[in-house]
Length: 224
Ligand SMILES: *Cc1c(COP(=O)(O)O)cnc(C)c1O
Image (cartoon, rainbow, N blue to C red; front, side, top):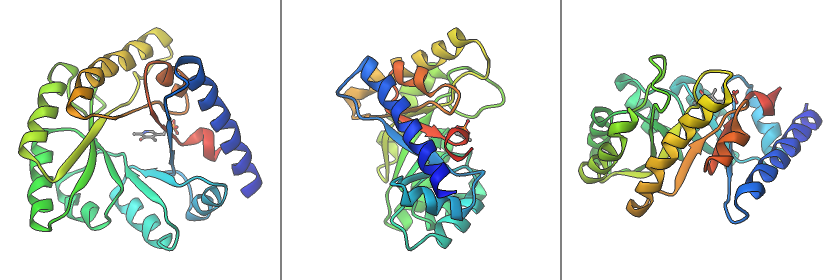
């Protein structure tokens, strides 16, 4: 298992590097290994190969996996849609980053809890650039304004940038357009301190990097 995961990781890093160097030698691209379909043994093995950041999309799974792997210095990213009744559970796990903040209302609820517990939380605002009903996230037209409002009214949330899921289609041009939409908003927010642009999954991460992503979230291509 370890040998296979190591090979996958090396291949993935080579592909990320190739895509990165083609557009920008100076950009650093983070890799978050999405472990939602993987066991804790697989996560521990990938860590032994050098991978440190992992992502989960369900609070309960994040809890079980992060607690059972507590002895390893892993960096946990929550990437799923967060229901209000799971806020306390998520915060008690102290994730490194919440990548899928999708509304002002949720931000305000988080802020209330964070303030009460004197905690802070790094977060990315999720933008639904492809405007798909099946996805959460803010519409691109309001994303910039909401970003600024959350920055103003939620001091315990440290907004670091944006997250998007590429359009759900086989048409490259449509996926590219969805990434470009998010990149344009990110570009404007860089003056407000946004540094992280999380875009790209197993099927589209090279395209996402070409469109400006500096964080890819990869599951199947790593754990296959
Ligand atoms: C599952 C998931 C991923 C990883 O998907 P793969 O196609 O397996 O790489 C990335 N981001 C989010 C938000 C996910 O839910």
